[in-house]
Length: 230
Image (cartoon, rainbow, N blue to C red; front, side, top):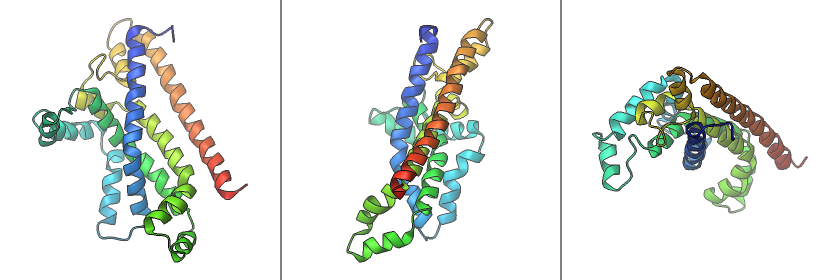
């Protein structure tokens, strides 16, 4: 990475940090929501499904603006978090939140499809042997759905690393604090002579995105073979 300047390198490292935390923090909730959508039959099922996928159809700038309203310095959520020492607006932690929200639908969808592919009769058989619903989930459903969990996590990481619209709207574009890789590309393209630095970052973004897609496919296939015993 010696061919990257300090500012470019800083943006890459911050993007990796933001994407990693966004994936780690959102994955447990994504699994829970995916399970509820795949197996649950309750009032508001369609509403929950719509809310989960809303970031996919909303303009990212709108999502970022909504985050700014609620978690900004004047928002209710922002004031509560500020009081406990966890400010989000114009901080890298806010970039984590924005990236996690934008990646959440992709993770949920991958995990949900994997859970729906698990034969319910296996879960019922475990239940008839005395296993509690929680134990059935952790010993039968989750292991068999692991290909989708891993694929969703990798795709979520790639999406979080490439998030731009919601992030720049919510936490701005502050070098060293909130300037992620996409924001740095945007900044370099706004100044004369910045094209070369932007191209370097674009190459890194393409490599990471393609690597994530290939890794996701490889993990899904490997785990599927392991689960099926092939």
